[in-house]
Length: 309
Image 1 (spheres, rainbow, N blue to C red):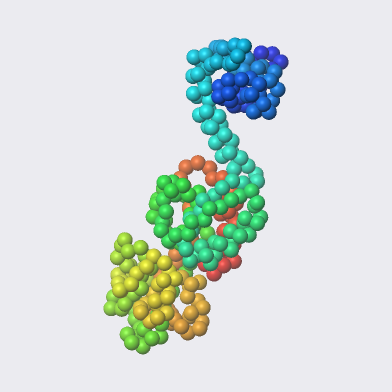
Image 2 (image 1 turned 135 degrees about the horizontal axis):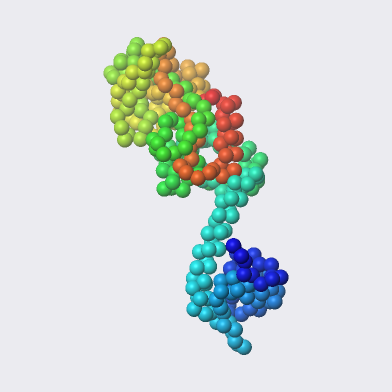
C-alpha cells in the first residue's frame, strides 16, 4: 500500500498515536512533546504525517490551544484501544522470545507441590530472573481458562478434556494400614475384602470411593470402598491411617518412610493399583510462552530424579 506520509518524515505510527492521545489530553504541542520525550517540531511533523496518511484534519490549531476536529475526536476514542492492543500483542510475543520472561500463574496440589514442585521452582526462578510465578496450592481441580491459570500440575487423570497436557511421570500407589488397625480388624486377603473394612478415602467427596486393583495380566477391577473419613488432602488421610483408623491408598513417596519404620504395613502386595499420572496442563488454544515451556521442561527434568518417576 502506498504510504502518504510526507517525504522525509520518519514516523512510528504507534508512537505517533501515543503522542496524539497525549495531545488530545493536554491540548498543547509543547506539553505533549515533553511528555513523550521528543522535540516540539517532531511532534508537529508526526501529527501532520498522521493527518496526511488519514486524509483528514485531526486538530485545529489556534494561538491559544489545540482543539480536536470531529475526525480527531473519533481517532482519540479509538486510539486507546489500538495502543493497548498493540502493547498486549508485543508483551505476548516478547514472552515467546528466546529468553524466558513474563509472569506465570501456576496451580499445584498441596502435598506434591510442597514436596516436589517448590524445590524445583526455587532453582527455576534462580536460573530465569526475568520470570515471575504466582503459585496457588490447592487439591481442587482448577479451571485453567476461567481462573486465569497458565499451568497446572496434577497427580491423576485430568477431568477437563479440553486442556493440553504433558506427562511428567507416574506416582505408584500402595495400600497401607497401621499395625493397631490390623490387630483389631485383620488384614484383607483380596481386594474385595475392602468392602468390609474402614477405608480412608482421598477425594473431594463428589463421588463414591472407588479403588481399582489388578494382578499380573488380569484387567483392573473396581472395588467400592467407604469409611467414616474422607479428605481432599493426602496428608490428612495419612495422619488418620497412622492412628489406626482405617486403610488408605496413598502414593508410595508419601508413605515410604512410615513403611520403612513399621508405622504402616503394606497390604495386598500381590495386587497393584493403577499408578497416578503426573501431568503439566495448560489451557487449550494458542502457543505457550517461552516461560511456560521452560518451566515444564524444568519440572520434567527435576521429577525425573524424584520418587514419582
